[in-house]
Length: 260
Ligand SMILES: C[S@@+](CC[C@H](N)C(=O)[O-])C[C@H]1O[C@@H](n2cnc3c(N)ncnc32)[C@H](O)[C@@H]1O
Image 1 (spheres, rainbow, N blue to C red):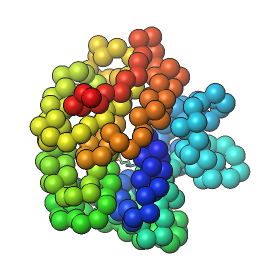
Image 2: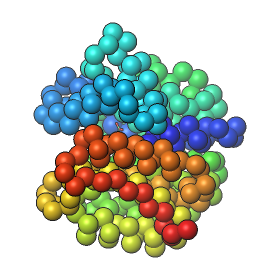
Image 3: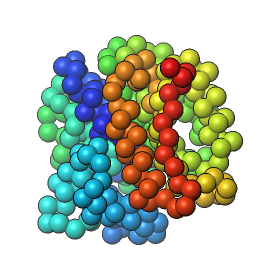
């Protein structure tokens, strides 16, 4: 979904700034201990890479994975910083915030190596704090937290209120889908910001067990998100994910708020 969004936003010749509040390490070694523990990313991306009928909305991601694994196989997987700097143009900028010292170092090294003519920098500071400052440029804010803290949803809403007050800002927030109460409460908070919202969800099973990761969602928020022309791609990405990776009762949905 990030690549779909960047492809649309970079059609406009005006410079684009990407502010990634939770950047991670940049790219991941799927043979590493963390990735092996969950096996989740590996299963999902392996299914995608071997499915010739996967929708064309995934072509950019597939090409990125092939580029990171030139000898074939599936060892390296691109994170948001890698995808962003490869999609951005000369004159665009990327700022990635990462608190974990080892991931920050890996991120800085990756950006030095891979960013080319894109003005790209890593910061070791809190990504939410970066949403507070003024901005006068066309900007995409990416928020992809680990959701390990109880106040994560509140922090996202506070950060969005500040960031979206700046003209030219839109935001993409990655969300886990565990239970409807949590999702609905967050959506009410988003609606209170009084900005257009597109919510794309891939539910992998009915939401009976709130302790499980039952799916994931991306909320796009800000003036202009419903006019970007990304709906068809978001629908096909979520549709494939639910069908290929889901269980009985899996479903995809796309909501536009307020409704048209
Ligand atoms: C889900 S991962 C991000 C993945 C990344 N967006 C990607 O696509 O590869 C969340 C990251 O946020 C970092 N983190 C947690 N709280 C943070 C904060 N307040 N500011 C910046 N980074 C934070 C964690 O160390 C972790 O690496």
